[in-house]
Amino acid sequence: MKQLIKYITLLCALIAPWAVQAQSTTVYSGTSDVGGTTEYSQYLYIGSGAIITIPAGKQWIIASQYVYIDPGASISGPGQMIFENPGKIGTLNETVAWAGQPTTVHGGNSKILTSVLIRNPNNIVLGWVTILPSVEIATTNTDNTLYIGSSLTWAAKNADSTALMGNDIILANNDLRFSSLATQTGSDANSFAVTNGTGHVVKDSYSSDWLFPVGMAEGDYTPATVSPAAANGVHVNVASYSNSSPTETTTQGIGRTWNIYGENASGAYITLQHNTATNQTDFKPQKNFVSQYGATPNNTGDAPSQTGWQVNTITASASTAGTEPSSEVNSRNYSALATSATANEAFYTKESQACEPFDITVSGGNSQNIYKTDGSITITGFTPGHTYLISYNFNGTVQSGVTYQADAAGKILITGFTKGTYDAFDFKNDTGCSTGVFTGKTVTLTN
Image 1 (cartoon, rainbow, N blue to C red):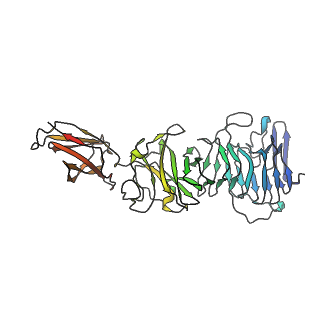
Image 2: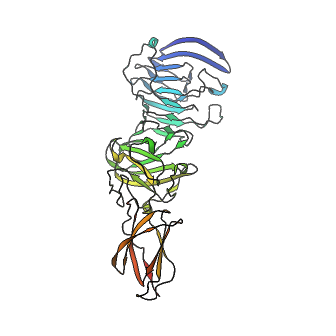
Image 3: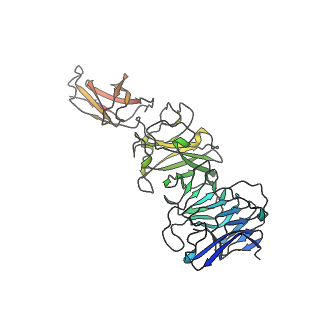
């Protein structure tokens, strides 16, 4: 039996085959079968006693501007719950008065156990929905989390098959949460979760690959894939350098920082995708690494760092093309995740560093004998204009480091070498980043 209370707060309705305009309030407070129902009311309230079922093969189409879901409400069934484009409802292209507006949803952290489809080019916005005095809903719940218990789909087309652009979920300071068994499909550069505040995309305890479709703003899609080493719940947010907590002063970064933490400290394989449009001046596409924040100086990476960010070996994780045009992906395995959003170690980014593996070649005349200093070594792959302290071994003996400056091509030419073997090259750049000793980089000058 459907128990429905419907209030018309402003009588302003025009109903025709092509248009429906109304400003009203609909309240669900009891047991309801909503299959085949379309909600045209401006305010839709799903109260604490609501038990809503969507039968198989049926849809519950919500064209309301404001949707309040009480934490005690139950929404389930094998059908589909659709947050509709209020400018294009069904095949009749019906329109309501708030066409062109986002759908504001107070999710109440109530697990929605039915398939959810979002189809509003003006977005779903997570936030508080005002309780009108006439509705008689009393609650102190301020949790705006939208909790997906079954599946979430970002639609690529309107109901009439016309193209649908946008269609994001704007989180602000609220979470989009997925249960352990929930799935999500359809996210891409046009449809994803916008983390424009402190809110996260959350996946309850899982142990396989999971794509977190996040971006700091509409049109700025920078997803992360987190693969836990053991079952873990994971939270992901991404922000610009100016809006994230760590200190990011390098010009060798990408302008984006991910906040990733777990419900427990087990490790995870983390894959980050960014857009090349945000590359900073000294960032090297295809020559960069994933970096985790920490204490300063940070010695948790592959090489010592004088900043709070790790320095890692580039050959350990080569970049590849991302899922979107002009995007780039890089990955790294971490033995532990932070368990708090505010922990230093909860922040990740990607960087290039001058202490990457360089190509070392011999050029010029070889030394004629041990007494002549007519040999030279060319080292390439540096950041143009930067200085480097270079040390090495000569015939097994450590030589004192000498500082050189890279030319406009990122090359350093060292002259004055005699006949012999040069290896164990070590480079420290002008920010204090050191490669450590390279193995397998040997130059032998002979007659």
